[in-house]
Image 1: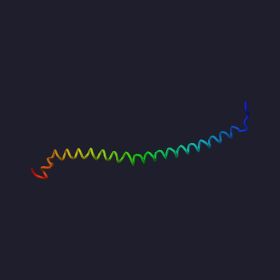
Image 2: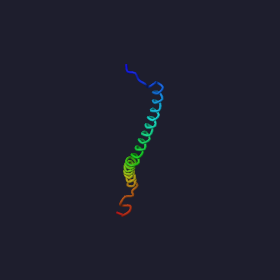
Image 3: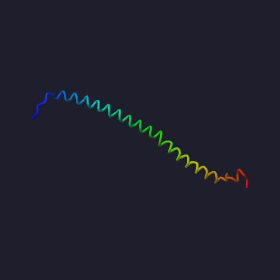
Image 4: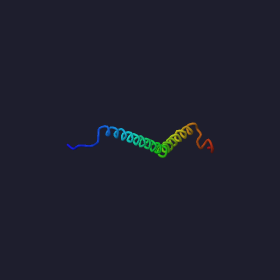
Length: 78
């Protein structure tokens, strides 16, 4: 069995330091991932959703508009 000059105390102190660094690095990566997700929503999803809702709303409004009798005949006469 090979013998090591490193004591258990040295290993435990290094392990806690490494885990703190690993935790900090993981936290930074998590925050960066959240920022990227927010950018994705702001640049891609919200405009697409707004376009889709605008088109849906315009069809509903136009159908109501015609149902009330405000079509071409109302403005241009018969």
